Image 1 (cartoon, rainbow, N blue to C red):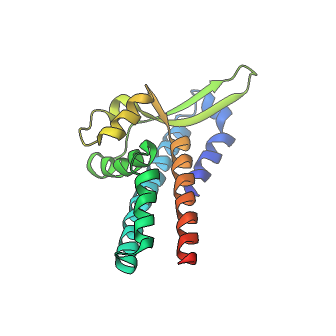
Image 2: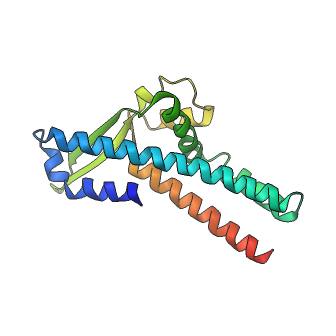
Amino acid sequence: RELERIFLIIEANKYKLNSTEDGELRKQIRRGVNYLLHNFVAAARTLVDHTRVFISENYQATVLQEKYQAKIAADIKSNKNCLFIHDLRNYMLHCGPPALSIRTSITSGNKVDAGVHFISSSLLEWNGWKSLSKEYIKERANWIDIDDIARTYSNTVVSLHSWLDLLLSEH
């Protein structure tokens, strides 16, 4: 939610960001995004680890564990967005904050659009990416929209945990 909030701030300030004059606002946004992104990826990986431990400690060798592992194999293990977020945590731990670019553009309807992106080429300098994460970065060419990947990941995790809650209730 905090990361979403900063994207609302970006949206509210998109006209200021379209001007090259407000360098301090851009600096504050980069700092805020990096700080909140670090919290996001750390929390994402923590939730993965805690859920895995919870299932193995409480449902070892049960049908519930089998269903959970099958769901993870089907929906998460090959999901490039999820794997990228998990590897991004390691990137930020070992390399620090990634290079960010604040993007502004004017759409065909003369509306200003703004966002924050990773610069793909700088991410690819790190050799710690797993193969699917690396593919994910390369598929996005020059940049990766942070708001988009965070929302996509969040939707996937909420869906998984809603499914898990129902499975636990049925069990």
